[in-house]
Amino acid sequence: MDYKLAVRDNHPEDTVIDIPGKSGITRIGKGYCTIIAGPCAVESRDKYLEIAMQVKNMGAHILRGGAFKPRTSPYSFAGLGIEGLKILEEARDITGLPVITELMDIRDLEQVCRYSDIIQIGSRNMQNFSLLREVGRVNKPIMVKRGLAATIEEWLLAAEYVLCEGNEKVILCERGIRTFEVMTRNTVDIGAVALLKDLSHLPIIVDPSHATGKRHLVKPVAMAAVAAGADGLMIEVHQNPEEALSDGPQSLTPELFISVLDNLKGIAALNNRIFQ
Ligand code: PEP
Ligand code: MN
Image (cartoon, rainbow, N blue to C red; front, side, top):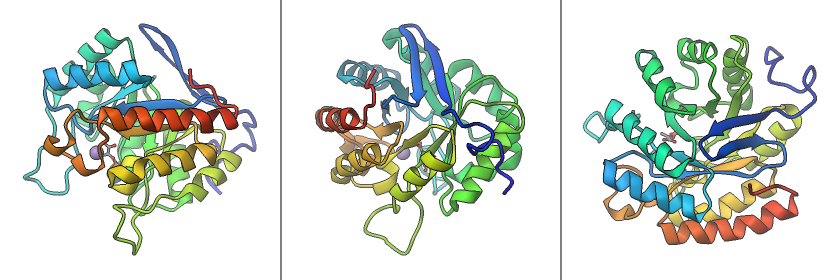
């Protein structure tokens, strides 16, 4: 196997990633249950700042929001671009929380690095090898989402691309894979979480929103993920999901988000995980 830097053989200790922010250090990895929350996309300044404050007050540790959105149709809302990054920066200042956003194109690397604390490589780019090598050369944590139909081995090799360029701050994110099943948007692979906690030292986050595509399935899948050993979750939350410009059906209302967090605290405690 060629994923020698991603596995435990030469790195028995769990990797813990420290993300410095205005209100201290946020940790991802061993012993922590880190919650990343926010809307699918940054839609406007006012809406983003409002939801950012709401999820922060409810207990989120990191803010999410796409400025460059990979959309299946070229006619769908594709994000606000640089304007979206600037809104994320403002939200980071106001809330004191670190932010994560997706990088789709090497040409945007400098700007995304400037405004974001963690760089997300989306499922569609998990095998964009030149992009992976490029983010392997920056000093920022990189979250590598599992490809739409990627095996665990292909996913680990994608992480290896980043690691072998010298960037040790890699986070894996299980977000469901495409199978014959169509009642859920994707098929979430909880077994992969347990397997990777054993095989790899890298932290693993689960995204129950893209994994299911359905709001009412987010809570049970989130609980299963933490019970299986996930180091945290990335959850889409929108103040008015009916009007969201992307992924409304899987976005939680703030009220539902509180209820998911309440349930998660119990599971995290059972697993001796710190909810920061
Ligand atoms: C996202 O998290 O914003 C996203 C587009 O997810 P994925 O790459 O998993 O489809
Ligand atoms: Mn989304």
